[in-house]
Amino acid sequence: MNSANVSIFSEEVCHLGEGPTCDPVTGTVYWFDIVEKRMLEKAWPDGPTLVQSLPEMASATAFTGDRRQVILTERGLYIRDRVGGGLILLQPIEADNAATRSNDARVHPSGAFWIGTMGKRGENGAGSIYWYREGDLKLLYSGITIPNSICFSPAGDVAYYADTRQKRLFRVECDPATGLPAGEPSILLDQQGQEGGIDGSICDAEGLIWNARWGSGALDCYAPDGRHLRRIDIPARQSSCPAFAGPQADRIVVTSAWQGMDETARRADPQAGKTFLLDLPVKGRHEPCLLA
Image (cartoon, rainbow, N blue to C red; front, top):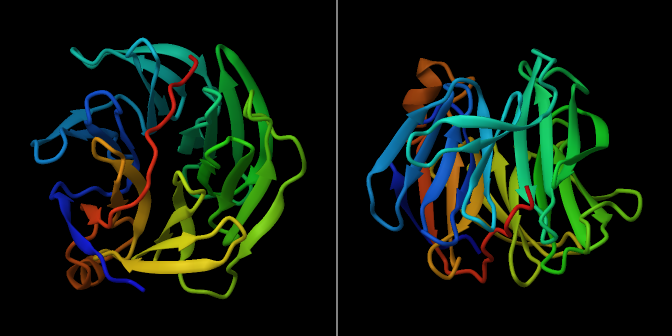
């Protein structure tokens, strides 16, 4: 089943749109154009798209219980001044490695941040996944090429992550109180040989996994056991990452990209780089507060 009302949430075209997140208090949706060093925001549901230039590549954001905004960049975590846009370093992450940048990230129900890094040129095995909470940083996994699909079960007892290059989605049991792995990862989905790659994901209140399939123009829904439940067509082949949005977190926005496309490919994919709204509805969840 692939029927859904899909509209354009923002006409602003991103070279590499990623990392959408909805502020649960204000309803504002934030996302990033990683390559162009831009952060975009749009008040729900029909505010203008505002764009801020950033001093470095950034890919994700989170919010603390005291209303501070934290953004993840190629050099680490920063507190962002919402009024002036200034950045104050909170936690360096691979700041001394000019070859890598941040990528996918999401907050665990415990308040911990799982953070992915990768090579700026997609070098094999250059990426890692870290755990961060209250000034404590731990390396969880290394040797990942393109870390994506970081999301968590509603109870926080399971984490998911993918290596898009490998086309594999992993599942690992977690300590719900800390967000730290409590076992070894296992392969939930292996899609080698299939079209597209596993990109960003979110997990809803029923434990269903909603995954943007890069290169296939789709948002797929999976059961916790890996069964494919439905596909929703996205009008851009390089669909990159979803986020729950709206006052009840019952709608989904999906970013996209034109990265790597030549002029012919872009003419054939005229919506590439725009951000889309899916009127399903779904039983989504607002992002937990980060314990910074």
